[in-house]
Length: 88
Image (cartoon, rainbow, N blue to C red):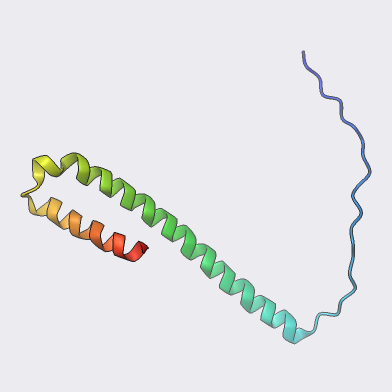
């Protein structure tokens, strides 16, 4: 069999800075963290929405010729148009 040889190396040196965290700064950092959390959540939702939009595009493409007169496919096309506008 194949065996791994682990080479022991020393830990990298870290630079530790001395700082004094003022309560006002900590509060601002907490607010910033909350904003970043909201942005991350929004980005995840946007990614899911774009995935659904891609699926919708494929569905419309495959069924458009058969069902182009149907109201359901027309409604799906309107939804697709709205998603395109929202993503730009």
